[in-house]
Length: 461
Image 1 (cartoon, rainbow, N blue to C red):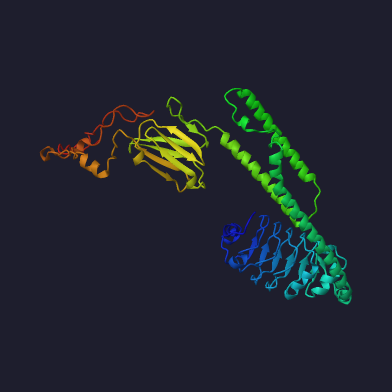
Image 2 (tube, rainbow, N blue to C red):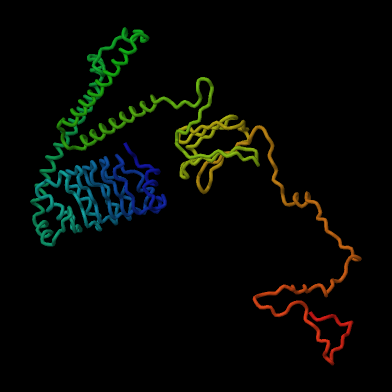
């Protein structure tokens, strides 16, 4: 059965960053709780508390929740309204489908002056004659009962009929309490029979599979007739399965009263059935043969049972192998186990082996395994057992190793000014283009009377 623990409350307080001291709303429904405990000490700021669909038989440990405005206890085993007087801010109380038969316990809600809504539908007391008139007259602060608004005329009529209705309610309540006492006695006798029953069957009847067992059967050799034994085992398993189906069918077809005891019995039956299924599934898992990692001849196998992407690189500069295993980035590191051997590496991811043979021998003691902060991959660096690390040449080494640049020197004696006369090329005597303007050098007009031939002046080009 479930209990109220700090871990449970923190898991249910995710909307409040798992902080419980400042928690204002929490839902603890369908947790198989049998008691209300610790909530009034850990969550004093609560305003809304959901506890529906549990196995709570009594309202308790909520009186210190001064700020509580809404309390939902629907679908539980509560038989009496009590211990809510201290909830000064309580405005809504939901007790739908419980076992409240002591209707006079409604009187305890008179101290909750802020109470406006009350739900008692589905309880035995809701079947009493005069139930609604009694509650309306008993709780003048109520505005809604079972989802129906209380009108002023209804309240006046209920106050007038209260003395007569009170007598009827007391008689019906006494009858119901007597009936409940008988139901408790019958449930107690049934539990006693169940405790004694299996012992009698063990002495006088055959075993669980319908066969008789003696000490002689236990001494029979098991080496012979393996096939027959296996077939008998299969038949026994089938018999057990059919027997369980018959018991299950008998349990659900057996008539029973709707009481807190029967509801608790049904829950225990379902819980035992669930545990037996889990036990059988665990046995099947144990029977599953383990994957072979090393053959009988000693040969190591490559295995990737978790089906993860990986890469194995040879880092020659650092003389090591680097394994990059793509495990999930949100996987907790406690679920990963790394085992490095000289010739192979094995990684268990959630108990599933990943194993790979290395190309060369490595040093396990000098290896390192790290998680990537960005991708979450597992990066394993494994130094090689042989070889040398190749140092990277640095900039200083490059400057020291390079030879000085040899520069050519020009002899100043061989230096001379260029001949300006030869800078411009001579024009080609060949004609250019379709027109022939001149051929050769221009002729000097010697017959001109003003022409003087100066030998120091170079000819015109």
